[in-house]
Image (spheres, helix red, strand yellow):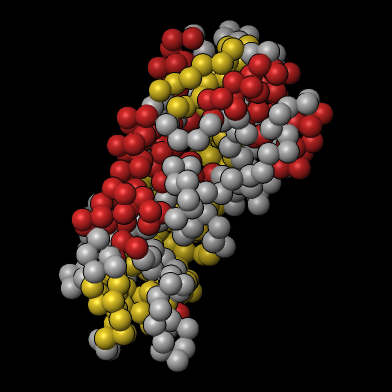
Length: 352
């Protein structure tokens, strides 16, 4: 939180009503900012009402920003289309870059604020004249993975007040201040899926595109029937209802023949993939080979790898791990770290 406040003391804070954004607002108030709480109304959940209660407790102004149409079109429907295309999406990554963070920019101009802040566990640093992301002090809660697509226009206007704190310290501050969110549990669910099962959303929005087909093993032997490839993801084990004499996993979604291929776990251990939609935080375009520790999911352990332009796929990058990793999945994001700096990230388009 080292940004200057003497010229423009107003800041917008993204308020969800949860403990993290509540404490972010609290800390900025204590640092002398005039804080305005802003809640994105996505049409899902109770964030506007919950945030209003927190803002009332803090004695700050609260505004609601309507993003229902863009959220539904870009995030929810994008999520559905990804599954129908055989991908496993990460909606938080796309929502941050395409919907929620950009929605703050008009609000900054309207309110005369220079910056906006969120309750994400991450840090921002300057490197070679550019704004870059650093992992949070609390590595178990670090959320920089979800922010890798943010460009310079957004990072230059953003603050992450919780980046230097642990989750325990944040909860303690909330309790001491008597915030209503102090004991609120962390949510790990996709915010627009009430049941916790994405398949219900697929049936609701695209039932006619879920075509039944065969379940086969790696030799093509028929094992059963599936009710639509979008209902399955690579690496899935539960709900297959097949017996092979060994633990069976989904190892391929054969969209050409509408077949679900199952096999042994080892089939999912791979070393290379092609990345697209890449964002390099160190430069406008990634140049040469970048080496670092790469995470292929938010909760996956980082592993050493190299990322370089793909000679046989112009415009894409080739991700090459030193050792095979389990569960690389098209649609997920691969994010590369050098020490605690986020170097670049991209969408996994194809596993090689």
